[in-house]
Length: 403
Image (cartoon, rainbow, N blue to C red; front, side, top):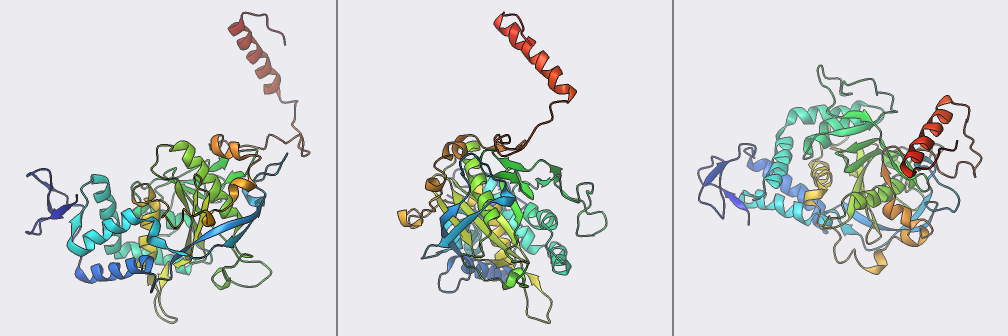
């Protein structure tokens, strides 16, 4: 049962199981005009009659995620997919989050759990924060959308925790200043190892990992020779980005390994496409792959100033807090006809995906000798380490060391 705001408007909460009052000042006063605007944006994610924001199940027709005697980096990933009809509204997999938000917007009912109240306060405060909106709008002036800027000024502000890890190989690894350019603004994340997967299957680096629970990736669906911008590329089977699909599938299997106690195994990745967001989901337990329609970060007519799209903010809030707000696959998405087919494509190496994936320290493939790679054996550490390891092993067995 949820707790309700007290009639005196002080923000005190009257809990259902106690007569004591607790003050939660983190919940801001939310004006009626923003209540209506937010509710309208919720309808864009949930109302099939007016929404432009859907989730499309995808069927994999071919992929190189489990090629015998070979391994494939994300940059060389190949994955052909076809959409499966019917589509589903975006909010269908976020029943928990949608109900939490609507209960507040409708009757100012607050969730009983502190974690959920914290998440609600993060969203409401962000929607009220016009200064943050102004910084985010700087994305419109950049030739390419900067994922670090979005991580610092959108996703970190909406997430339960503002931490994130940026690929240490990126060009800005020496800089702690935020790319927004505001004096004194620094990134709340850090540079580090964002490699994931396994050397024998799909593996490689991602742009940003948020709280070790979510991938943020720049996605380019544009054919360099087509001359079209990302916003002009139609969504069809020829334009699905195989790299983000591969990363979504791998990260979902990895999260299932790390969080086997989860209520469901539908894990998302965020793709930044031009000035829009697209959200990808894979359930590694039920083999269901989903891609959202593109949700523009900004709205505004030509010649007028663009403003932050609240629908994109709401979708981002739901996704970055999926551990608390995602309800998993609906009955419709659990139908056999909605399966992606990755299990059958990866059957030769499915056990690796299910139990051997890694986060960090993912190196070259173990088949390096078979595919023409060589290893320099003249490094001094090789012989020195070999001698010491043999001696250590000999001590453990009581047998003489044989180098």
